[in-house]
Amino acid sequence: YAPGPFDIDHFIGQAEVHDNANQWENLYLVCRICNEIKPKKTYDGGYLDPCNPADNVETEIIYELNGSNSPQFLCNSEKIKTKNTVELLDRVHNGHNDKTKYFHFA
Image (cartoon, rainbow, N blue to C red):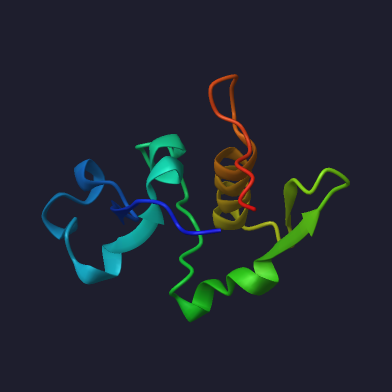
């Protein structure tokens, strides 16, 4: 598998943070396809930030593969940021409508 094209994404959308949109802490390298699937507005409560040690993504989210090798993401806490992140990961990895579906990288 070779990575495809990438985008620079705003962790919190430009319209939501205005003047601080292009601060380094708000910019991430993301897969272009995933960036197109991701909602343009941040869910109320935000997402876990994988670069913020206080968010501890590895303990907040349980990652599993089901029988068809599709990833499954489960909340390991009641935090709204965790729930939002799990929903976003599911949307990006497993699709959310007929046009988007799980991408097999093999």
